Length: 536
Image (cartoon, rainbow, N blue to C red; front, top):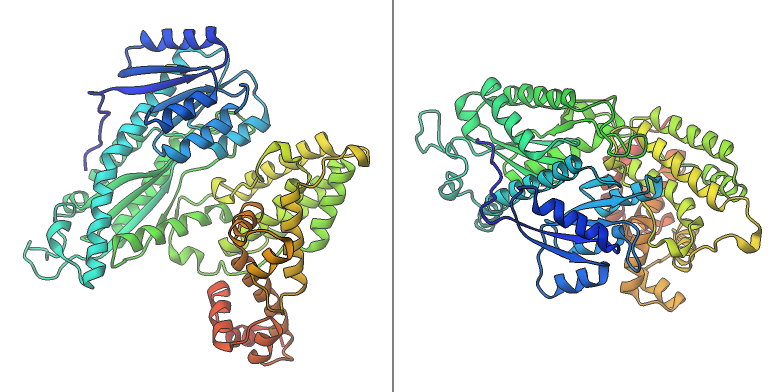
């Protein structure tokens, strides 16, 4: 596998967005003289014309925009534009190194964050990094789409066809002598999360290390592509032992980690650290299954002590459950209202310690993170926009995740806590409605509950209510209802006083089989098995 290099034959289009004309002119002048492969530069005074340009068919590759602008600010514009142009790279320029902007930049998918006055070297470095990322991404789109198409066709035929796959993996379906003998048809995937390393650098590193660690046939039958920002898929046809690929993948993750400075954040002390880590799948019958498996494993890095590589065996006992006790959440709300930072830190420290002491499934950590963000979102005024949720997936450790949460609470308490009742920001209408619905589910989980019933009660279109519930809670209505029911079912089962069929009925399930299926999906074992493990 060769590392792709930037294709600049046609050049790139750059959109410069700033409400100050002298700033726009200065950037355009610098870019025009940079020698970078730029085919066109468009300038805009605010976000409105940018949106109109894109809706009319404009396709900028890179957008440089100021944060502070009339109408849409730079981050709002970035979020909107990236919904239409997924390949667009955004560089934010700002004279404000504030936490609020930096955390919103993460959500908006910003590639680079530059503080004014912008240094020429920093600007050109950021532009070139974006160009390389775009080129590498485009080079892999066609290859990946072809692989996925082949697998879809194979699944439709319920068989694997060696023909097209051999164009990607030469040894597919062949034995060690190169004969068609139903040989290698299984895949292994390494899913890498690599912080702040340019794609070209990572591709070059992979190419060099594959030759060192893997046999030539293993190198020839591997595919590397960029999946999302800072994430890469390294897919192998299983033509050599899994252990050899494991050794290579772990060495690669460690090497990348050594290349990254101690603080990889563009805003030191504000953005989360994301140490390099990888998930390694087992042998899978399809490339798609191997990729999904590896990505799910990689998520567990936040629950472990800085692992370089994670495989299924490493998470076998990460099955414990946890829900943040309601008295902790109530205490957080009271501390926010009083602007009491000391109490907030103490409560969050307790929650962090409780989680760190357990080997949670990643799903349970996601649920706990949703609970943590609800009090803050209730307190933020509607003018600040949509609810703020940061997936723990973006963080490299529990320590940095909770450091982010503490800063979030501190900022909220500092800005809104301890104010007079008539000047406190009101709970946003949509957050209040969803909180009421969630509270009703928590209390009446054993009753017949549907989204349509709640929609009728509140006079809201059910489709809109579904979107609203997911926006505020970060989880869809049915999944939330299921989690509440299963959480209560565990208490009933652990008591030993009820049969499985009785627990199903007490938690709102009319069908024992469906209850058992839902329970096993979340907990990983059947209700009967759970009862057998409960302390006597």
